[in-house]
Structures are given as C-alpha cells and as structure tokens.
Image 1 (tube, rainbow, N blue to C red):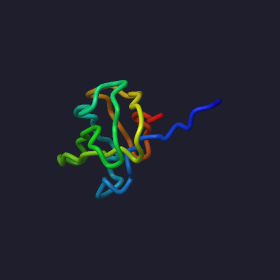
Image 2 (image 1 turned 120 degrees about the horizontal axis):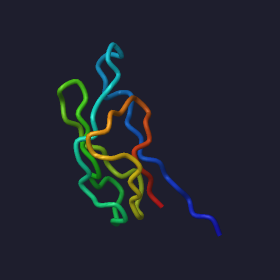
Image 3 (image 1 turned 60 degrees about the vertical axis):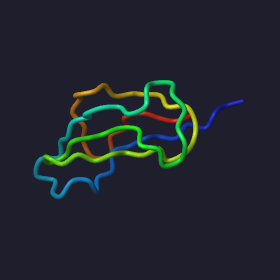
Length: 82
C-alpha cells in the first residue's frame, strides 16, 4: 500500500517581484517526523526582508527536505507530509 505524499512548497505569491527570486528558510517550527494538523505553522521563510509562515496543507507526519539557511526560490519543495 503506497502512502499519499503532500508537498510543502514555497508559494510564488510571496515575492513582490521576480527581480531577485531568492529567499531563505529561516526555521522549522515542527521537527522532522513531527505530527501536524491542517493549517498548523510548519516553517518560516524570509523573502524580500519579510518573514512568512508556511502552514501544513494537510494532517500527517512532516518530512523535512530543506535545511535551515538554505536559499529558496518560488515553487521550491521544502518538505512533505505523509
């Protein structure tokens, strides 16, 4: 039986312009392997000097794919939930 995997992506809408489409993954709020519910805050990203909180799109177990301080771009997958 395969498990459904839901991606956690950085929304392109967080960038005011695409002149410098880079941000930084500031921190994970939930640890790798932690349980999350729909809408729970899971990570904080810094884009164009502003902090944005990313939330869980579904409930399940968080799996981190991107390390803190990594550069992120629009649409990047930073983790997934099973």
